[in-house]
Image (cartoon, rainbow, N blue to C red; front, side):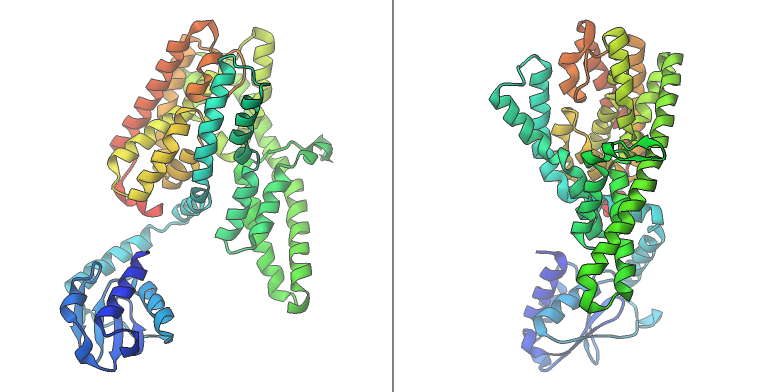
Length: 459
């Protein structure tokens, strides 16, 4: 039961029940009740309700609960009583209690802190957090199956095929789920958002040539999906506002899909492709320089690439390195990005008192160790903001270490601990030591200056 539901139920029980309420209203901090029989009120019990800051008996019974929640409690009581909510003017400053003044100051500070960037991060959290249980379950299966595959287990045996199927399912269709949640978060029709995800990750993209180049499946990544899902909602609302109700169900989704679909293919995917090609060229240049700086830069900036889906452009580099040298030195460096994120998440878990955030981290850590980073990336570090940066800093130290030690992988696989069997020249312990370095520095940077408890309000 939510806090406002519990408080509404408790208040009703101590004012004589819903039958005893004649009028229901609220101002910015106070719930105001006009009662039929005031003798039925248990004032002492009302004061003891968790969340009630005070009781004021005047022409009406005024229950001080503070800004931000008073309207929610009133809405719950309206549902229970069937009474419409009246809104009254805020009492003068002289009539405010000390608790009300403190609550109003806190609410004003919250409103000042609601920058567009922070609101965006909160939206991202709202989109991905409902997906975390599925990502965790599938991630554990996927990570364990890929570890066994990398260790030499025959992937063609039936039980391995089943595990790989179960583990990869949610990741195969993740774009559709993200699109659905994006449209729902912004108040649109969820299935249109799901279609946006399906468009950007549809294998048929490879058969379409735009601007003289074939489109690449998945370019634009999940951020591209979120943008397309938001655009679906934006266009849908505008179309619906002018569409006659009798034909709305036919033409509103049709026009929305055509407009956003063509725009995504002619703008989102090609722009992501140009960015991806530029980044690929830049990484080739950094690899040519080599050394500690290259390792730190590549590992430190890899999470932002994953975030916007541009990491797909690195696959040809891995394949080219394997073809030329029989191994890729790039992959162990990039694997440190997820490790820095794991360290950051552990630091947040140690510091925060927010139980919901702790539960998200507990679910995401096991798969994070196995190289599946989505739960921690989209559910923890990115929505919080600053921990995303400290995770990248932690990754940079691990990447620098892997570059100095010239660690390489014999093939492409899931990162984290799951990559260990693919490490070349028996440098397994060196690779694991690099992971530990990234865990440690990600933890250290986040613990010292990457997280404050008020950040958890965004989760």
